[in-house]
Length: 108
Image (tube, rainbow, N blue to C red):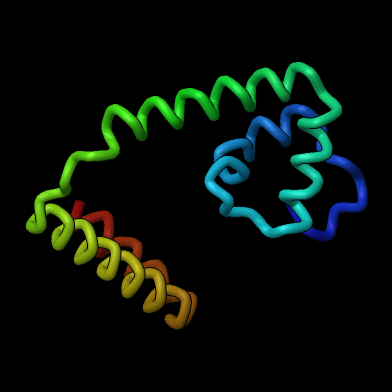
């Protein structure tokens, strides 16, 4: 969803962004449009209610598990690596970008 959209969202757009809405990860303007659509659209309201219930169930059943510290460290390290690679690729000259992509593919 884009904050510059003058048109109200359609059902497919609402459903595409439903988890962003449920997780409070969208801009306020988009969130307000989502809420308005959900309030006025029975099928989207039903889907919203179902996804909200599933999210609560998962949290209740799985939300208490502690993440092993070594796993957390590995994930955070990988995120930092990917960010560094993306930053390097965006700053590289066009010819260098191809080389960065080739190195990434070789690492996989």
